[in-house]
Length: 243
Length: 211
Image (cartoon, rainbow over all chains, first blue to last red; front, side):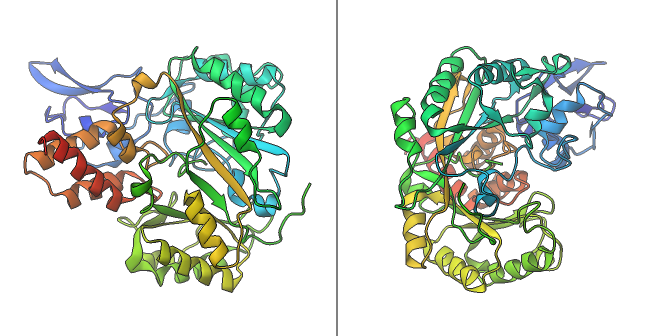
């Protein structure tokens, strides 16, 4: 995003709307104006969409590669080129009753880098992807992050985008329950080596007796599952048979 | 799309926050789902007075697009935010009875959702738990701010905007209702719970006044 300094009246009304605090005041041609710090801006589009600028000074310039990747991941209204869908993730467990993507004995894990609200570079995302790739996890092929992993065996990301910063990006993968603890411990370890945060989601097909086996595994790995969940209540048809 | 999963808050607050997500599956029952999705909007409209918010990413939240419009257009997904467990249950029962065959997800306290399912003859199929935030957590804003910002899973509600709204309330320049609506407007999907946000803002501003 950019601010047209000729039009800007320096009112600072737009500043709090920036999701990553990247709008500052500078002196320009003997007046105070707002400016967006280019390195920090994740191209989420909120400042423009909020329509708070009284002089319409905020505008979206044409984004060229690799900067365009920022909008693809940060602005949920931007259609991601690899999926042709808006948003950052996939249908994951939301349609699991009809897709059977996550069967019993298989855990789904979503590691959302940069969430909540901190943002991430692809350099940090690569560190986590490489850690997981060493464990041989199955990256979700329909997720936009998979499109930027150039080598699924190593987890290496397209080098052209490593310095780019986005609001968040979701690493989705599947792993057998008996290897889940190993993967969660690896996430704990790598969390100390990154300059951002990530939020972790754990997907489980409920067993016939109503239990959720992955929860005790997560606790063993030192994670504390929160009481709030997303629950697919099985109304989709045709129901997918068990794997 | 984990966007409703990581909402933060205490049990009392989360007990007033249930998000319904409805979505057909690509390659399974997506084709031909348009009319069913319109019918589902029609059922949800029976509970409009109980809804805090509704919408979807493509067409916007309830401040931007009316229920009447949603009932006419093609929807890839449906979001509806309930604060009342009984209203949610009644809506789910109606959806179940119509047997649309479209997947339904409820984001909320698992024990409550499980009980609601049991009361209407359903059982959880697949569950996603939040395992919390890890890494450089010192970069995060205060917890009360996070309770508000995490209600937009895409991160469109800025922590600084929450602070700005609280400041304006403290200075008597904005009402709680207007502040929570302004925050809600940032969330395109219609999953932001402005009722909860207003309550949290009241706690934040009371704290700043030393109450």
